[in-house]
Amino acid sequence: MTTETIDLRSDVKTLPTAEMLDAMRSAELGDSKAGEDPTVLRLEAMAAERLGTKSALLLISGTMANLAAIMALAEPGDGMVEDPEGHICYYEKSHARLSGVVPIPLPSRKGMMDPAELAALLDTRPDAKLLCLENTHNRSGGRVVPLPLWAELCRTARSRGLAVHVDGARIFNADVASGVHASAFAQHADSLTFCLSKSLGCPLGSVLCGSEAFVKKARSASRLLGGGMRQAGVIAAAGIVALESMVERLAEDHANARRLAEGLAGIPGLDVDMETVETNMVNATFAGSGRGLEEWIAAFAEGGVLVGAHPPDRLRFVTHRHHTQGTMDEALRRMRRAAG
Ligand SMILES: *Cc1c(COP(=O)(O)O)cnc(C)c1O
Image (cartoon, rainbow, N blue to C red; front, side, top):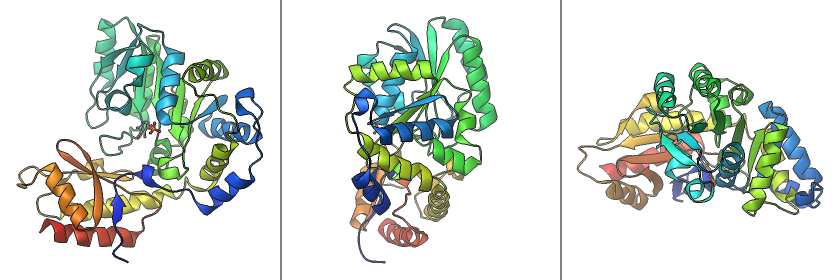
């Protein structure tokens, strides 16, 4: 281990693999906006098959995919039930500005919405037309919403006429961690998007999956947002490599996160709720440590470890393909020293 800084801030920091870069260089390309890029068509077919949907659409980002889905599934003035701690509500302000959909907050508990609370809420909100769910749940520490709860939430919404959109940025982390295939989560919803970047290692790209009619509408919506792309096969080529070779290895990231979490729990001043450590993320709190968030981050950075945060009260650590078990042990050594 060198003294190189260890970066545990986010899986968005991952770089493309050599195989991805080779595939991007040699990809067969065409005008994707006209439906003529064979590599994009191949990726979209692969993604649809993997998620068990009829159709799929490559877009540049998860934010655009979520927004295009919302615009396809709801009209301006419709209500959208969402978790205030969900990525769409917390980070993506685009739907507020561009979709005209009215947010209806339904707080989750550590990422888990309650179907009874959802049903009670829907009794009072006939304007609700869309439910957004997230799996894994980012701000709760990458938790997996288990399939039985998932199915009940979707059933509760759909039996009342709502559409369900899934922000599945990290659905393959949920798949690998729980052993429940991503398609089993997708089948209860109308649409699902997943990120090719993040843990799958692509430089960019998200894929939005759903029925043919849904994807047609989402494609139109994405074009309003400037999402029509030309030789997008360069992005798709990396995505194909990701789906073929980067999914199963997520188990390593999860094992590393667990190792990291156990070590962090032993550092005086830090608390880790081990129940929430299911995938590639660890959240730690520091109440009563005498140090604030910025002080913890600065102390760790000084010691050679970059960490993220969910302000005001949580440090956030994320593992990915550039880390090994040795990286975890070295990071823990440095953080123990920095905390002492
Ligand atoms: C990263 C992420 C997104 C999409 O982010 P982009 O940066 O726009 O690709 C959406 N949802 C969740 C849960 C995420 O973590």
